[in-house]
Each structure stands twice: as structure tokens, then as C-alpha cells.
Length: 375
Image 1 (cartoon, rainbow, N blue to C red):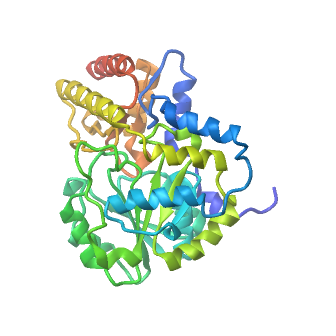
Image 2 (cartoon, rainbow, N blue to C red; image 1 turned 30 degrees about the horizontal axis):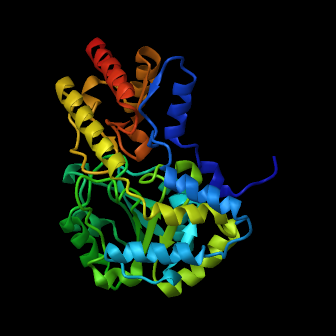
């Protein structure tokens, strides 16, 4: 084989997909692994896409995105405290591309990016492709929160960004105001970007503290969001990136080189999404999360209290198995799929997704309980 980019040699497929594939190959297996809403995309959003097709909105959109959608995103974010203009928005191919553009756009080979762990595996993949160095900052001993002491110990002259995710995947933890103050106190005014992965901001039991109140960070903040999780639009691949206007003009060039622009008729539907009430879905996730927590409590499993997203992260190290072995055997012997903590730069835990049907949760947890009793 002819030579390829050397950075690709250390990249691997997502561990999440690896275990969901194993589950799919196991007859009768119930997957509690993927973070994908089981709801259909709300009808008004689907109707908007159909109407856009009937209006023949099938040609190129501006690279940045439809002006109407950029205005609506600006309005939405201003309502959350991020007063911004449409020129500070880029509509992307989901939060995945938003994160890719943000990170590829601010780091050079050899630069360091601090990532609190456990963390979504995509982060390492992007940083590997960029030739950057991921500096893992464990948070378990700090209750999955951020501390000034631990963060300060990770910052070096090579640090170019800190990547934060709240509500967190896989723990469901929400960073407190104190955690965000620790970040602001250390990086405000320094040549360090803060990349904020806020894809689960609407999926929380309460208000999610954000970086909007920290005005001194505005020129260092790159915000990534997605339509996938809150609006059950995972297959639509729509998200956006927001940041300082001068930086966004440069990042727009990278986005344009990658995808040119997102499909026009899908963007029209995204405008409708921003005006769609999804409280019923959020309430359903909250009920399911409470049910799963109750069942895990009855099984004697410990876990950090989830305050957002739709994941729970129980500890399984006490059973004497690695998390990979635990999840493999759970699929093979009990017909239930979870994701090992090692997929998230952590060990001794597994991730359980609550965005499955109630019946799937009940059967899956029954099987998990029987599996634990047999160990």
C-alpha cells in the first residue's frame, strides 16, 4: 500500500461502534449503548423539510449557512446569554464537523489540548488527525468536576485549547459554576482557546451553567452545538459553530473546504426546530433516567448522579473484570450491550444509555441484574 498520512496509523474506530456492532451480530441482544433518541423527528420539522423540497430549495446555500437560520441561531444563543451576530455562526455537518473545524482551526502539530476525562472518543480522533497532543485531565477524584489545581497542573506553554463537554458524555455530570470559574481564572486573556461542546444543553434536569457570564472569555470561546440530540435529528447531520467574528471568518474557509455548505432544505427545517417544543422528550428522558437509577440502586451499583444528557455511568471494577471484558461477556452471556469506560479514556465503569424504549430498559436491566448475580 502506498504511504498515507502518518497520523492515521494511530487512529482507531470508535469503541462505541465496536460494541454496538457486536450487539447487532448477537441475536436478541438489547443495546443500551448508543446515545440516539428513540423518538422520530418531530412532525413540524419533517413538514418544514418536505415543504422546502416542494419549493425546490435544492441548490447551494451560502457557505456559512442560510441567513435565516444563522439569524435564528443568533437569536437562540442570545437568549442563553451569548449575545452574538449571524456573522459569528457557521452551520455545520452536526457537532462533529463543528468540533473538527474548531480544533483543526486552532491547533498546530505538537500543540496540546487539555481534555477532562472521561471524554467522548471523537476528541482524541480529531486531535490525532491534527497532529496535536491530547492531555487527559482525570476528574473522577473531583466528583467529575473541574478544579483550579488539577487544571493548572496540566497547562504548559504548549497548551492551545481546553475542550469542555457539559452535560457530559458519558457521566451525565453538569459542570458547576465553580468548575467554570476555575477555567476562567486560569485562561482568561491567555493564548488558550476554550472549545465548548454543548450538544446536550437542552437535556438537563435544570439550567446548565454556561460560559456566557464570563465576558473576559468571549474572544477565546468556540461553541459547538447540535440539532441531533434535543430534536431527535441524528440522521440529519446538522449543528453549528459559534465564536469571535474575526476567528470565524478564518474558520469559515476550513468549513467551506470540507463540505461547502449544508443542504438547503435541511437548513429550512432547522429553523423550525429552533421553534419546536421538545419538553415532552426531555421529560421522557428524565423519567427513564430516574427508573434506571432506581434499578441500579437496587443492584447495589454506584454511579455519579447524572444531571443531564441521557447516560448513566455505573462503576463495575468491584466485579474483578476489566470494563472491556465486562461488556463483552454481558453481550455474549446476557444479551445486553453497554459501552466500556475505556472507550472514554477511563476504566472501571460502563456507560448505559437511557434513550431507549421503556420496555428495552426494563428487559435490559433485568438481564443485567441476572448477569451480576451470576458473576
